[in-house]
Image (cartoon, rainbow, N blue to C red; front, side):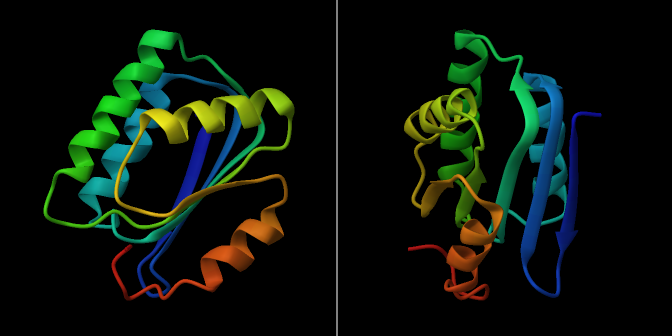
Length: 129
């Protein structure tokens, strides 16, 4: 599976690491797990690591629509730090951030430690502003 994730309920943090070619189905499986485990309000790191996108433009639109649907739920969405190492990953992350509009902080980083530092400045018990 191209996306491996852990959900820490005590620290209210989700960490996902992507490798290989990531498809819409892979991302949907990740989102389903986050939703089922009641961790949508948690802080999240989504690290693209050695990943390449297998998402078409239609897949990106579908993913954006899915996130917008989650954003309409009463439960808030937690902040998201995307770690994109390459220019191509950064472009996909930027497109995602544009299409997946929600009331939550989202930032794109080139380095994991900077993403983690940013998330650590946010209170894990407070809903996203």
